[in-house]
Length: 264
Ligand SMILES: NC(=O)c1ccc[n+]([C@@H]2O[C@H](COP(=O)([O-])OP(=O)(O)OC[C@H]3O[C@@H](n4cnc5c(N)ncnc54)[C@H](OP(=O)(O)O)[C@@H]3O)[C@@H](O)[C@H]2O)c1
Image (cartoon, rainbow, N blue to C red; front, side, top):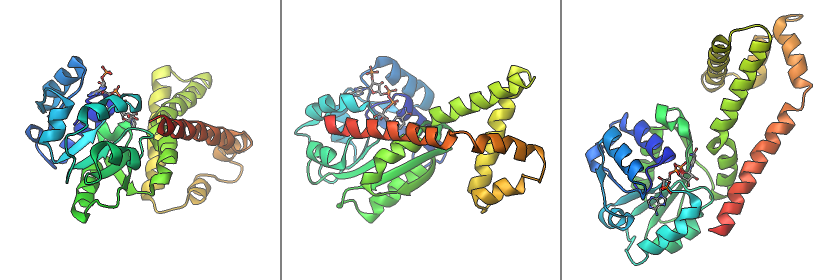
């Protein structure tokens, strides 16, 4: 692992729970001493003295550094053959083509976009692969990201939209959870009760969407009795520009991912 910051350690934490591999099998490097020490103390991974050494000594390499730091990393790793190595990058906006150029045509590339709830095994990761990735390597990537939540393969062109939706999405979720709680406070609830009930209600609703097998309109209909409280609340919600605002939010984050891919 190159980069042991927020997202890198969230993935480690989620994946270790699945026993896909042992912590001692992971060789990690981060330029930050704090991040290195934190990963060693928290997960017991082995530490390397450089990113180059991680690349030279591993058959699978996960790159989890900020997109703007990748040119320096690629320069340092230049000349170390990526032949037959599986390079997994979670760097927003860094294309398969850029990664292929950095690690050589024989490197096999998985470009992925996870999100931080991976730390709880509740992440959502999307992956796109270079053409030379083998079926076995793909299977390994599925098992890896599945350890951190749900996972899907998507065409690479969709990864910027995934970044805008689920990569950045936990922040939208936190904001909306708090907004619902604040509304509860205004309606007379204690702050801690309002936040707990808001969060649990959103977990419950999202889990119903994923697990009930019902469509969203059906689920809404199930809790909306004629003349009841939900209908009164939903009348306000559906006559407000919530959907348009969320559309703009995802569009802005996706556009930023696209911009990052142009500067890399
Ligand atoms: N956070 C998220 O929600 C999220 C979600 C999906 C994808 N991602 C992607 O995950 C990547 C990492 O994001 P993050 O939030 O985990 O960032 P982060 O917390 O800043 O972690 C990145 C770590 O990499 C270190 N680093 C920088 N250059 C390095 C190099 N050349 N070699 C080794 N380590 C280096 C940084 O050290 P310094 O701090 O000292 O620079 C930092 O400790 C990004 O590309 C981002 O697009 C993040």
